[in-house]
Length: 587
Image (cartoon, rainbow, N blue to C red):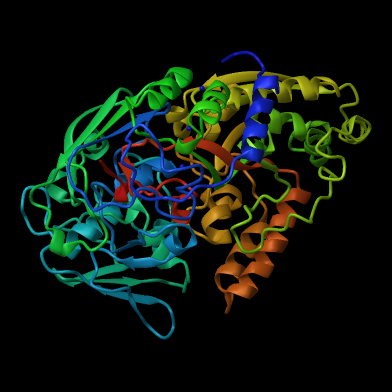
């Protein structure tokens, strides 16, 4: 679930965006006869724009940032997960309905949702009939088990989520299929496949989010004979309605129909286009122009248009615009193992010295970019608490408190400030600009910040590697995060649980190692009711802020383009407010 070198100020042009947003009213969806005209402003927000069952044509994506991996066990970008439903399937998946209804799990490869034992530790699934791979061979329960086992091969399969590994094998006893000494390479004891149509998961401890974990692409099957290990990302083998025709990483990707896929075996995917293409181009402004010219249909990244793109779209093409509210939090992780951020007061100095309002403006202002965030949990997650603001960010309207910042520096033994480095992704809209703004803010309190840009697709091996972070001297990491699934566990555990710190593909970028936080996760996961869990996650979020290890600054919104020829366009809460790609068609 990730780019220009000068600070982007809030200009008169950006004010035009705000004015347009404030005066524009939403229009209804539906088919239009004029393909040059969109379905209406916000026509795709929580409802379907241009509903149609028509098949055929080519759906054309453009993306300013490449996918992180085409391998389902290695991918962690939200837009990649959304796109993967074209060629991967899971036992259960998210419903193809607009808005919050999309958070409901529905059967996919399985005939039904799990049969769960009374103690909550055993999940049993029966597979649908007629499941096939792209070569026409039968897809079996063993293929699903093998795909999941690949998560354990962390020396090769890096970057993806580790939930299933930690839940099914918390002691780390299994070494993965590449070191598996059993004849069939299916030696993970926590998963049983008594026959080709049955798969059984046995958890050491109950976890109410387990089916949500299986719905992630990491729960996808992989055919063992087609597993090329690290090279699998170059040409994954399809279990869905589309297969790879060509893939040039960082340049282009083309999917065509998988003729061996049986519509009767898949109630989820309408599979409307004949072909799906993606063009990867880091020229963000040019990408926006090509979208508005009709050369492409959808921005695959779903992270919004550039400032110039927003202005043009709102002035001349507002019927093609959705002001999309996402579940993403834009944040700065303070690396607790990097001096002087091993000291609480030095971390607090950053919270006090940051101009949150200026960061909001660099990303487009409140309506285009979202509200200032003070809770580390997005509003959609039970336990989020926007009233808890120990640094007074909202009270001071996002402006810095220089006096308190300097006082905190004195308390941590750095009265004259210090120097550190922050990473920012060059291909993520406004991230470098926001980091440059933060550099200017913190300089006023004596913190000298060097901005180091990286390519987003390389982040799992750079900012996701504690040893590389130390080698490069990063004290701060700017990024964004959306829920893996809609709970405190699904948002926060990879970020703040010490058991999720890995040498590669690490998303606990602050390297938080707090036994109290770890226990809070355990207690919330074991809670008897969602309400009890939410109370614990609320306390946990307070502790994250009190420890000043992770600084949220925006609850993200964005201005997103919806091409006039695209049908069945709607925002999906399950994919953090992004469009649900698998439902899209073209006129």
